[in-house]
Length: 302
Image (cartoon, rainbow, N blue to C red):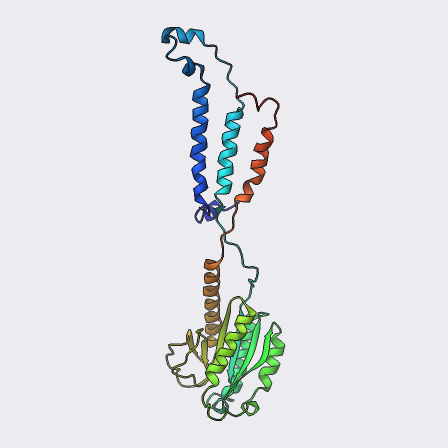
């Protein structure tokens, strides 16, 4: 049984001006009924006490006549043309899963052993746990150092991502370009945003680092996973900053933050999508009413 409350609450009309035709059709029906009354045609010409005895009234018909049929056809046509709608059109590019770009910091500081066995190895273990929670959702990998590099495009193969995570190390990163120090973070986020834009749909950026910058210009607000013993600073440019913990509390918090971003992105995508015109659902009823116009004698009996 359909949930009528869920349908009627967002019900609205895309072309409400057509609804004015429904009372116009009702007035037309009333005018025709009044015009067809024999008493109305002779009132004023025959004395009232004689008129009641001179009029022969036809027997009442239970079936609707041509005028009632025409009113129903006009009213239902106006309702269909008004564009009733209660559901938005889903995007043809919508995906059930969110795309995620993992930006892994490969600075030399990630080799420190204050988080045993090292910050980098702890980040790898944490990311493995996160991949297990995300199952087969699309994930890409970007390496962050003095420069930013796309390591792996979007894939649903968590095993491939784990393979690349195991071999990434600071020694693989090229040195910073001459005269352009400190450009790794902006370049990495710009690369991640470009990858999400090409992929389309909802997506998030996860920055895994031990030393996030205090200020950073980014179009999207990434989730920052701080892999360090000290508490991370409050970052105005990040969606949330989550500190590495000894247990899996941080993994759950990161996954929850990414899910919140996905829900917000889908809500914005839904708000921007078009409402579906459901007036076509009234077409079968209109066709049945139109068939009544083919009855013998209906075009003459008014």
